[in-house]
Length: 201
Length: 267
Image (cartoon, rainbow over all chains, first blue to last red; front, side):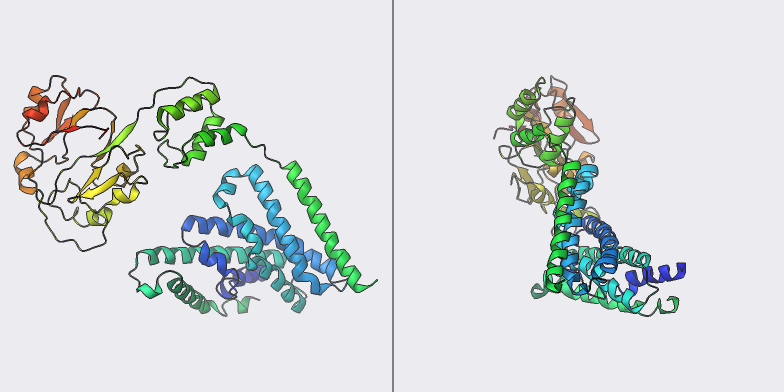
């Protein structure tokens, strides 16, 4: 049981990293990774929303949409729920953790449109449909792992970006082109993790 | 039931539920915005320079609103006028703002100072300093790569003849250049006429003479004529105490090497 949780957690971080293997949430990955501290703040907020969103959407799909035969509505309903949750997190954070609220600024509402959040909540449904032993708790662990994987990718890439600032780059590659090349190389390096958790599942 | 109707009902039901939930959350977790903070923000100049010691103008406003003991005179950009307005709003006594200006203690222009190496790295004083203290023969003096120019929001500093020069009328006294200078040769001085030594070389006279034609040799002639006792020596370098200097100008006449200059913050 514990072993399967560990496998799900590690898979979400390394082999199925939502940014570097599934290419979800690329916009903040490129936009917010310029500095290390904003990258970390953004990743922590995404992790929080991911877990919360999964905690609401997974039971809603299993107990409401699926029995009524409305599974096809999942995308619409999930977006609705994620948007409301982000708003709720924003309200609560403003009240109880104003310092974090100010530090995150515009990134917090932007999580609403982060496709990684939608991706994690939707893809986990496919997994549970394939495998009956994939429970609600597995989905939560997967969301947490996805968040940690997001953090890992952001922090790694922020380090690369900070190095790029000082590098002597040909003029035609400066800015977004070299960033995309660097992102591709980081993604490529994550291919090296392929298969390492297969034995655990 | 009609499947289309069911879908519409479910989605709008969820939407309504979430909407109601958010309205309630907003009601229960409402934050009372402090009106005085907004008014203080309007008074402060909005330069966000950080000279007050807080994270920008909004940080200072929040600190003022929260704690009445916070000094109202910490904003050098707004000066006395802002301090009085803040004090009037908060109902506390206003103090005098000591406006300070930046001043560079080096006059080693191109023809005066020697170079000990040819530096071809990135154009930054910090980077140059990391390589054996910079390319200038004088390890104390200005390198002239303009880290201070980049730090200044007011375009008050320019590099002229290889040395940074502050235009006092543009300087707002935020002190960012002081922290930006790797050689620590920029100082903040009070706004009054005074004499100053535009040199930071603490070596003995002979050594100073080797690296720069316009350096202070530490001959102590100036200290002998100073009636206010404002001149002290740090190694081979005369340092004039700004608070004691009366601006009489006797030391300027006494210095044979032209190393003491008259400083006017209003120029």
